[in-house]
Length: 155
Image (cartoon, rainbow, N blue to C red):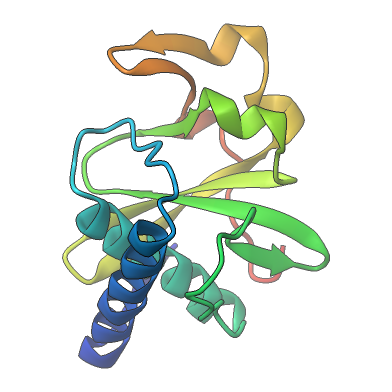
């Protein structure tokens, strides 16, 4: 399932990412970034993926910038953590996220302003010992997109 964001939506994602990054830095929130990429780039890409999912499900996005959130989106009462990437066919989730998990984890693949909603997995499906990997920056959970449940029109 492919969703295209327009220029205004892409600018909105960057604005939210800038404001969240400023807030996090001003409050000395620890950076748990495992990719080594800069926070603003990761934040912008993540919010773009969230907006794509919201657009697909006709949901209002979370525009809060002044406090950390456990989840990105709520769909039919279920919390989702949206993971957006440009090059991976894997859903990767930091190990520490299993301490306070969302109900579901979703993979969105970005190509410029086009976003493919690859699918989702429950916390039980993701946090299985076979999916635990050791990376350069610590433990993380990893599952191939072929093992994800495809998004449907309304879940």
